[in-house]
Image (cartoon, rainbow, N blue to C red; front, side):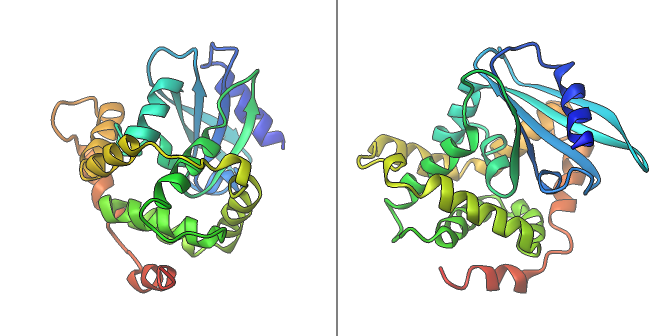
Length: 244
């Protein structure tokens, strides 16, 4: 808890809005001391643009690099409903996440993402209230259109605590009749299907915009792409999707 408080204090130095929600995502969401970096996203209706902030935080064994994204609500909505950024922001809630601070009436970003995905998936798939089916259906779709999702998905699959964490979240927070739409806008389905084919390009373009700030693919982007496709356990992925 001490490290969480220390991390929040660091983040608050970069957040000027009074109305926002702050989340950890990735392996650090389960244990902030795990992993090489600490990844976080803050979402607010008061941000005017997306900002990426990189800073160091002191830990027992030295320092950790922290990556913080400040994302306006309208950008996040556009990514959830239109995949405008290829899931660069919305897919941060596809695996492991944890809310660590909420101010005023800020957006429940994971709930928006997962309820939208449920309502989207059930238009084309036979879904029930089994959280594993929803989880694997969404992960399969992301992997299909963005193969560089394979490495992080493999790490998630191989971690029982992370899988159970998401399974419990879906069961307790998402798969509730009062949250699931009985009607569904067909234009939403059409837009998402069209934009799925652009997801790879849009995702990595957004990564490149923040990390390399170049018009063409930068070195960091290409290196990250390469890293994302290395040491993939294909049998692990195949076994994970066997029930679909």
